[in-house]
Length: 174
Image (cartoon, rainbow, N blue to C red; front, side, top):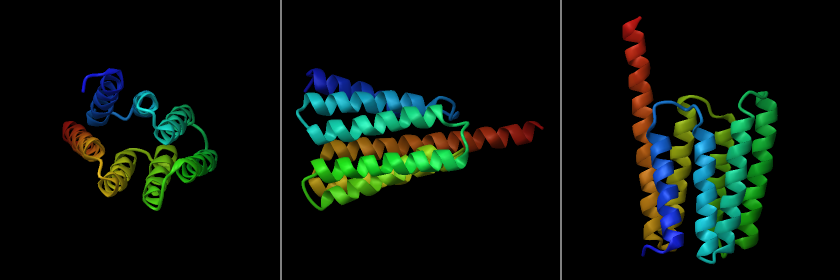
């Protein structure tokens, strides 16, 4: 239970939950990129080539999205499409069946969200992607996968509520 891959997975989960429960989106994509990179290492150490590759593409995508936040919407959108194609290709090439179509849909939703989402839509897009990945985990029978995606969804919801409360408090203070 507490071997190296699972310890790395626990660290990645903790980083994700802490990042998503924060009120601010500042640095969110970079921190999520680090946690997803740890998920890639986790799956690689467990011997899952597909898990490693998909998470590696996702981590690079998050770092690039963080770096491109000031770029034009067209540039961000085209880059999001390129990373979506890369994620779908990994799901197709390393996947094992139709259930991986759901993983591909989740990849596209989250990738396009990280490149084009701002404010609350950034959180809502991640929550939508986690819902799709929950369905994937359910279909493959992964209880840990369902737990992680449900936890990420809840963390995103908490962060969204905290962001809304902070903006309401700012309005009242004016």
